Image (tube, rainbow, N blue to C red; front, side, top):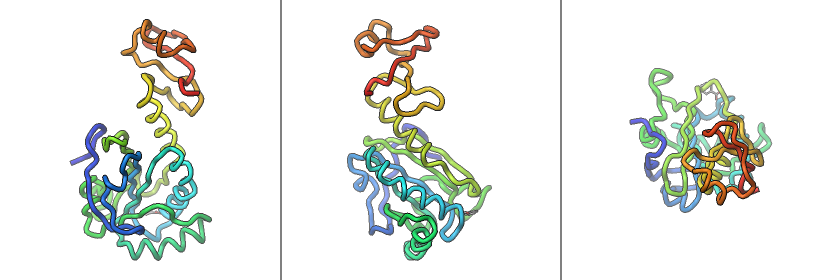
Length: 211
Ligand code: BEZ
């Protein structure tokens, strides 16, 4: 069954390039990103894993552990890691799950048979410290993902987890945010001392509270 926002992220134990991990234990109190790619030794996937390796410090800064997955076995991942390092200028620095029996892929519905009946699509799951799924996205094999967008969503999720705000279209760190409609103007006076602009009664814009 498909995993939905608000579901508990299914737990599993799997072999990875960094040894056996139990997913929930591995995440501990951190946020998590679990993402699949279709196949080792393929062009788009090679660029994606290089991109994530380069962004590792950004994930670390946000207390996020990243875990990749494909249906190839770990020894294939390990051989492919040399190509990622040589061609992308960044070595693999996060665990890649080897999932030849599709145990994790099936658990997370990462194989979409009408696209390909054996390979994983490009799934992304962002998981909170409470182990609940906060975001799911799915890309086709032919489109490499924009991992800056994943970081942007994590920034939004972490902000909205701490304050009664939502973030508008194309929001980035430091930009104005939206006061949650459930917050009354009376409450907002206390929560948002920097004030706000009321564009409509349901659309109140305030400076990012933690900046
Ligand atoms: C790729 O990573 O380039 C790729 C993988 C599987 C199917 C198509 C493209």
